[in-house]
Length: 121
Image (cartoon, rainbow, N blue to C red):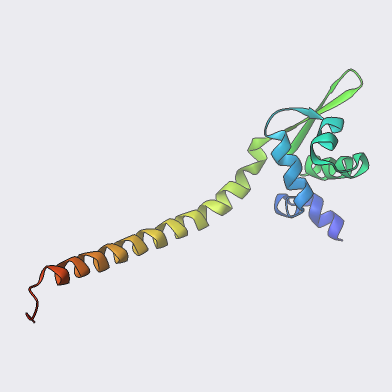
């Protein structure tokens, strides 16, 4: 059951750290399995297994060049992740803006209190 969920869902596919590492490697360009193995020091069978899962959800595309298979990221399939994260980015930006406003208010209050003569109420 977990296998079907993993291959059907981009979110589950990238939940595994090695798959995210593979995506990171592939953002720098198309690579053969051997190059990914060398770069990440993960066994070839494990890299192939992770590439299969990433391919099944459409995050990675493969093309044949002679006997070699070259893999690349399909950025269009990252859109659901981007859209989901964007909601939280908006929330955090709003919170940070409110924090900045609050800190600005505190700074103004402190400046105003520092400018009042001593002994004045």
